[in-house]
Image (cartoon, rainbow, N blue to C red):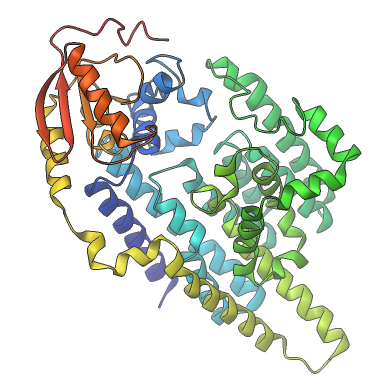
Length: 478
């Protein structure tokens, strides 16, 4: 099978998983509607506003999504909305971007280990659990990360340092903290003998991270401390650095406690058979590891979401580099060892490990007939969506919002004072941010008492409409 065929096949698998989830109301407003609104703003040649996130954060309908995460690279997707204006566009674009990491990964591995190991490794990447998790969770800016990190590593190894710098610049545009990953790559480049380049990457990465957090995000109305999650180590970055110096054992304990962190560490490192630990290239992934494991947010520690996709390509490439280093070390002691055989054995192991992990993660759904079944609640959800007219502001339960986003202004239905005349509620299925279905049913009764009328009620889905605007209007909400 050619690399092109593998890339096309991976694109199809990723798109299938994402689109089936969308069609069967398993995608969510946070985060698919959020990104759909932002990219639609770019497509209209305006600001990437996200009303759903703005209202969720108490920042109003005109909230600029760059004020949450500085991800200007999303503007590259805007022209796709001139072809199809809807969240499905993001699902397909994400599938393509994840799959496009396959060619540079193959080129790098073939150059280092040979053709057969290269094919085994890219298949392992294609079915890897971090990609499965990301594809299974709506859309995120991480879609650009495997491609750009793979290009950086492959071009650097090929001696094409101008192209490496261009890819590094693109990586910075993914998210405000990607400067730390670029700085980690700079440490690798320095150790590989490109000392000036390495210093420049470190300086550029650190400066950009500070600039993005302290200048660019506030410039568009965002809070630079929104995602600060390290109060147990310090209230500011300098305080955290002080803690790292004065209490290194405590920090090390934080990296592996509670147990779920150890599980995530193993899931991250074992797919490369731990040989990534023998490569300085792992320094590129280290900042993201620390960012996750030192935080006080459990959602960052686990394997359930998209966070691990930022480093999957880096760790596999580090595994390739580490295998060469480890094989060279062994050959110096056992000159008769065949390096090609060792490389093939390693790549085969990586391939087998990736396959054994598939049943534990979302790609396993694709071979299960029940994954594709349309149940009565999906039919009811489609009818509820059709009840809402186009062009209105609507508060929708988390798993319905994506289906309204292309033709309405979607806000998240939550336990707050209503701000829209239209509400699509669900009283039978749990949804973020609700605590129980009992409270969801109770809230629908409260909304009816406020003057909302049920114009649709089936399979737990309730569409509510109020002829006069609620007391708190979208423009006036804070």
